[in-house]
Length: 160
Image (cartoon, rainbow, N blue to C red; front, side, top):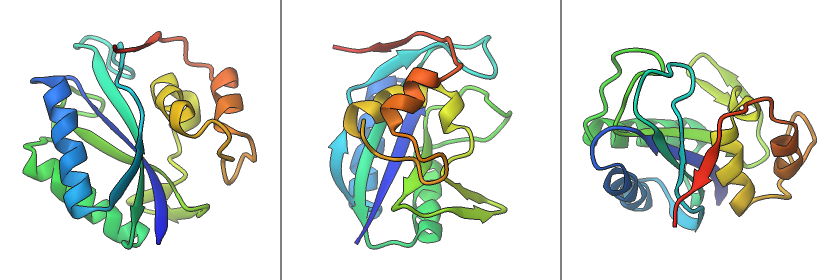
């Protein structure tokens, strides 16, 4: 079995409900949920003139290859009504593969580890909650140390 760390997020609709639905669909179609972080709220990153996002990190166990997992989560996004209109634009759901086992994958539509994860506090904060001592496969630093070094200054607030 493979282990993958995912990040779910969204900033439109009933955000908590959308993330909860994404977790249920991931569990049904992509793999067993082993851990999930609290929900975190942060200001939009990249395109800042939009509503705040909620994000959650997940650890799943899956029999799917990384490529099959990508297809599965893209199908979940589509099922949930995700529309890709503009880069960094508003969306009800976004599911990213952050890490997959200790693999390094560089393909046109699949980059693992996620190439932007170390520059985004909204990714590292929930990931550090569920896997603080996990070592990044190319940087050889723990997630908690990457969070300490993160250049992103946006506040990331844990929800109740």
